[in-house]
Image 1: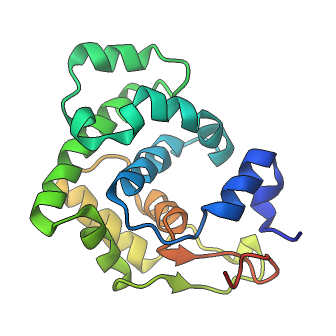
Image 2 (image 1 turned 45 degrees about the vertical axis):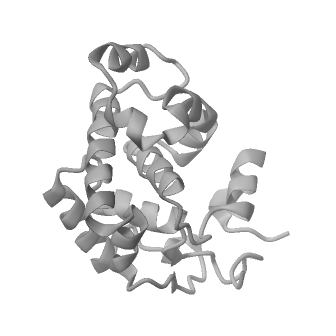
Length: 184
């Protein structure tokens, strides 16, 4: 079965590619999960984060934004000692900050989904890259998303992270044209 070239590194990457990547997500819990995971990836490989995903789910209360927003300093220190996640102080603290801001967006817009999907006018963008090399690292839309999230105070939301987030949650479909998921 032909997949996007990046997805052939491990069984876990294949499963993620085959079942999740590029599939539109509207559930706020899952949208927050990917916000955390994509931010954690900064400077690392996606394979590293994917291998730690279950650790993140356990450490961050299954990405319960209400719980994470109330994490104490003691809980943050516990997380910084947890080998199941990336123990970067800025990333862990950024997750707590982002949870608080995520709740603000939910209250303002009814859901984070309502807010974030506006950056693609509510519809997934279906690109047709021939190869992985044809997939951009960022776009004008990810630039706009990054700028808007940063203005609100979100952490680890640069344009490249935002574009990877858009791909992960199906706002953008960048499966290569030879991939079996291209038309799905």
